[in-house]
Amino acid sequence: MNMDKLNSNAPIYPADELRTPVNVLAPDQRNFHFSVTSIEVLYAQISQCSLNAIVPEDIRVQFDTARNLFLHSFYVYRFYVVAESQVLTTLELALRECIGDKTLAVFQKKLKANGVHFTKGLRLYLEYLAQHQLIRNEDFPRWHRRNRMAAEDAYRDKIFKLMDEQGLEEYELDESEIDESAFDVEWDYVKVLCETLPKIRNIHSHGSTMLHNRVSLSFVNVSIIINKMYERTASENK
Image (cartoon, rainbow, N blue to C red; front, side):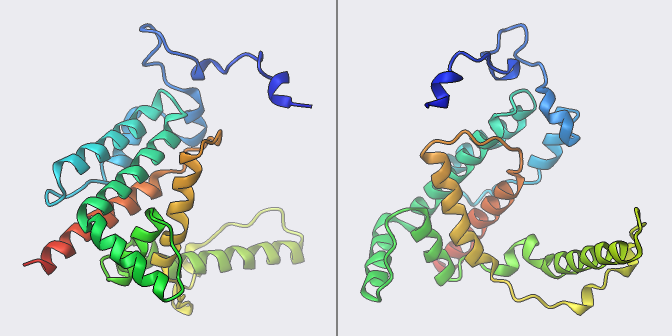
């Protein structure tokens, strides 16, 4: 049975309906569940992600379109995923403009000759950046926090085990007990980005009903990729 047909007449969640001039600036209450209590909260997040002046104006305009969508997610919660789609589209546009279609086509043929097959698109373009060292692990804050994240995960596992063994119902966490020095994680974050960003891009491109607000990391990563790409290509061309 087609459940879509069964639900076709179900009422739409009020915040998802077409807004009117009266309620167009009414906050989407779903934000409040995630401590987003004002548009200033979102502005504080998104204003940290920006493109440098070296990036062409047309790319910066598209990036700011994505940032504005993110900001307006305070009023329309579903704009979060639209904003992420826009920022990834901007990334692909920036890659084509900065590197050039001809250069990318040559790179694609070179990979194919070596038995590596990538269709034209974001995955191929990011691979070009990675292989030509236009983006590097150390460019990304998340990579620098890898040892901390590993230490925190190990600490939580230790506490959960302790609570289970001793039958404790609560335990006061002490950050001084987290030993980051015990970890030296080998993590190729650039490789992770090459694999995950195109997948997210494709999910948006082919249509999706997913709904979430965890898109800030995409903005951080895209801004870093575009800025570093333009900085390093400009340096190479001097």
